[in-house]
Image (tube, rainbow, N blue to C red; front, side, top):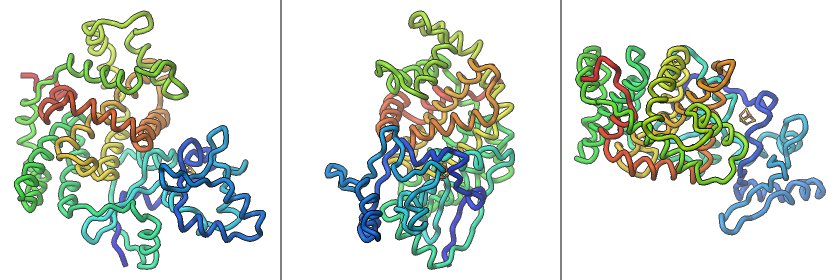
Length: 410
Ligand code: SF4
């Protein structure tokens, strides 16, 4: 038996192509592992083998077999009933590793298997994000045979991470689920926690992180929070500059936006009145204070649980602070910035759409942003490069992006 740690929603997940329009079978690269390709070469009768194998090409530059998508970007094996031709004619066990594993992301820590679902799958996103209760985690037993099959399928995608990650996750998730604080306040406390944890790792004292997590999760820890919040005086001008510079880097160079990116940019333009010409920084900051902040506060008052669930899932799923090669602080800065970009896009949606977006629409937006972060390596690299250039250390990042609240302005 193998123990697996996962959010409880994972056990309830049921892939349903009819609900999502088989989203994962479209517009992204499906690679076929060598063993599965060889298996397809044995399919009988020959005509069926040819039908399947002819749609898969070996890409020399990438060193792997890739399914050739149809002109509209959909998988050639996707049938009009939303089902997969290979699964239907050959059986579930004939699916490639990619198709079997998605939308699960897995890694191991010590003897544990950890897994969660990526928010790029609409069905998983609804299950994970729409619960008003804080996300719960469970330990389940996986029979040895099933575990061996998971390991085989996940070859190359099952990173082994430091045991200390479990203490970090315990502390971080506790902080992120502290509903007596605003989301920005929780992110500030998380910054202090990860900064201290990173110092221990760099000093070769990782064993102290267990105690650090105990301190941050103790009942009387709340008393220390006001001092942390007082230390972070928010800079609205830097926030606006950071967001618009990042948006310029990510979307600004494209001559014409397409599809959903175009929709995102239209909302930003309308929300900040940029239709005519580029506004001055001072007027952007005014709009930020007068229109953006009230809309954001209103959104988080009604739907804060969605954003909390996103943060908790994201931290666990991408095994922060080991998501990128870099220090704990650099990982933290990227974690905050990707969240802030997503929150920014959600607020511009609230500012410009009538009727106002409901919970389902906000989840759709998160799913879209998650697709950019998780499936577009160039996009995430640009976010990381731009962010780490501007937010040079943990305190700068917090002061530029996180608002501790009016009570902590002095
Ligand atoms: S894994 Fe998710 S996106 Fe893919 S078909 Fe199933 S429900 Fe749809």
